[in-house]
Length: 237
Image 1 (cartoon, rainbow, N blue to C red):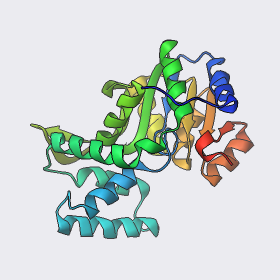
Image 2: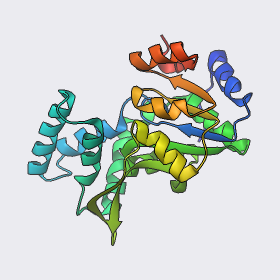
Image 3: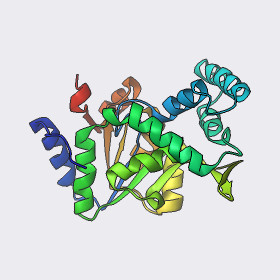
Image 4: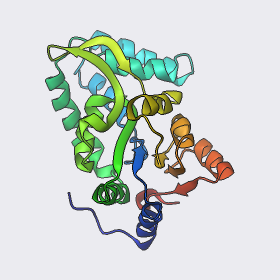
């Protein structure tokens, strides 16, 4: 996919990563590769558009409000955003997530991050997408980055006969990101990119960490640890 013309600052950022000659890279997705949270956004979209039963949507929206008030943990809420689809067809979910992503997230993709991944591919770098968003959204999104399903570590539930079950099999959030990288990839990244405190564990195991479009708490931590902070051009301060 063609990438928009980049500014000198964006090009310098890309070159600064390439000079490290990484052989293994790990990328968070929401807020790092694009603006916004596709996981939360898809959850709200499907509840409001009755993609899930109305009673279930009301229950999960109430749970999400509890999460925002600190009454439900991050892992529990992210897990429910996956297992709430129990009984649904994976093919139907694939269609819905494509519709949602194209209409609501695609325009917020950071061109320099897309170009960086393209350049890393050209150099033979092994690239992994690591996200607590459901795997249906991430699988579709990663087609734009040339990252195949087997190199995606996202929130997932077991499927049987093409239908989702209530059995959560993977939740890469916080410490879960670094743990799953070590379990699945079996080595630490040369470079890692994230935007929030939920990425700290993953950034900490990388030889070189990059805080991209960071939340205030991650920006503060990055400055203390000497991690590179980069603001994409579309939202640069």
